[in-house]
Image 1 (tube, one colour):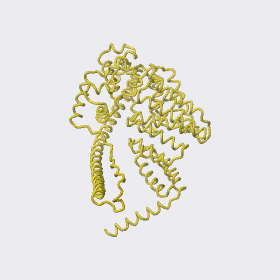
Image 2 (image 1 turned 180 degrees about the vertical axis):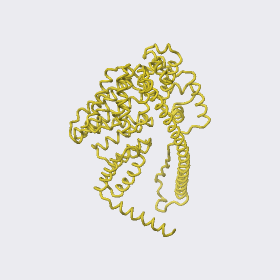
Image 3 (image 1 turned 45 degrees about the vertical axis):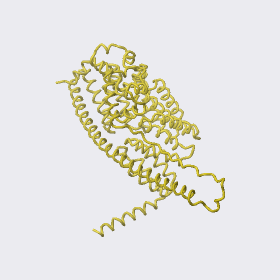
Image 4 (image 1 turned 90 degrees about the vertical axis):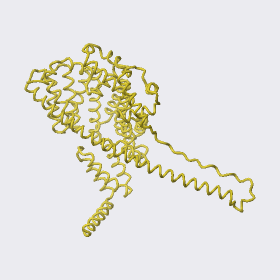
Length: 521
């Protein structure tokens, strides 16, 4: 047993020595290998990348550190560890030059991470830094490409904060124009057309939300044309998403033949990439389309496929939620332990400082220095100032009280008032905005605005389901009825919350053939 331990120890020493001996060119080769790995296992890529990061750091390889950290940011965002992504961005900003594409990406990805954490102000600040840095890039292609990505980030930001749809459209168009300004240099060709395809798809989806079907189909068709052109190496998952959107759009127009055509293409291409949530969408549009075409056998087939896949995904989500819940409890326990340790350190530090002050005062009062004994003009020591910022702490009974009041607020339907704000709601609930915002974020898992808008969407969905008269009203009336300031913001929020447009939701409630398709013999 002892010999075995010695062998393991020797192996570790030899492995570490061999890793240390890797030079910068070898690190660069290893990073290229990581970049070519399949994207379906981000945890594995993070583990390998972290090892390369340690080697690059030990070797003082600045370029290697920056490159591998840029890759790590994306992967940490993929797995939802946005705080870690922000931490890496901060390290990059200390090392990167002032006019560097890596610095632009760092600000841009940090903005995205902040947005996911509902830190909207910080996100907007980082986007402005990213745009300013991109403007200073020397290469025109670098400048245009990075600006296109930053403008896409601005569009996501304004959509997240429920700004007017005009703001979102403006930045999507800015993204498109910047991408079109990139020339077809071999180093930028794939980047250019990947960005163009995404921009056209996003504009298509926004026009769907606005009810501009003709323009939506035009933009989605342009995106699809780019994806199908083999000269450009566009990610296949993008083509699948576009085909799925076209199928739904044609279904909304009651052009069932075209809807079936695009759904079949989406199903075929999805098998090559594996996108289960999009596959569920494809199965859904397929059974609805074939129900409308009175093709009962196909409708039955896709109804069964949809139900099986949906049940499977629901079970997966439940298991993930249980695991995340357990992880959350562990994290809280770790945070409490760390907080206690920090408090102990603070109190020990304060005690030491107090002891030092007492010693200094005692020496001054009882053991004056002989050289200064006759000096009556010596100034007294300045008092030592100690300050530390405390984290917000809400007592349990206060949390329970506010949650009870929120439950009553939800039942009262006061959220449909247009003038409701965080401060007014806090006043109504007899609390302050800091407590209310923190409790909504912790217990509702949403920002204040997302929480209110979610209640509004749920309210209007219930009205549409239970009272058929609401289905006859215009979208602008429905928006006003549930408290939205404009039809456009309502449409975008409805689509974001439910995955479908208000008009499609209404038509699906009215379309008996869809319901019949779910119960075919």
